[in-house]
Image (cartoon, helix red, strand yellow):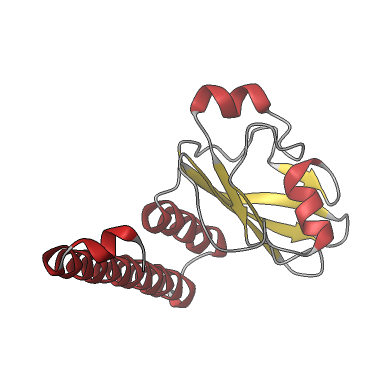
Amino acid sequence: MDDLEQSSPALLTELDALRARVAMLEQGEALQESLRTAALSRDVGVALVQDMPLQHSLQQIAQALVHHLDAAFARIWTLNTSIQVLELQASAGLYTHLDGAHSRVPVGKLKIGLIAAERLPLLTNAVPGDPRVSEQEWAKREGMVAFRDHGFGASSTADTESPVNKRPVHGTRA
């Protein structure tokens, strides 16, 4: 026991109440995260089962990623296996254009192409300074902090650059 806990029974009671309150807040945060994940899963499922063109479904999924993950933007590419190029199919949030510099990315090039080649998910909470982020000035100017990619890899038909965030994120490998 430390000196604070030896001070008085009233202090011990207050300390126990504070610990209980912190535990309840942590449980509430975990519940909110579970609810966000469930809502995202629901929206992705709905987008996938609707009778509509694939690009429209992918756009709905990108929008759901932005909404439920509180992301600055999200993008989804599909893999053209014949030429090993990721082709941007959907983009939501700050950037919605599909015809920019990242619209066609060879597997193994740029950050998204390297992630597809490695076939591993990625998380970083240090976008400025991360050598995999080529546009450092943009990241600093826009206040981007975190990036996560749940890529399916170059053997798959889809790869998602799941959002660039303005606050830290938790989850996949760093």
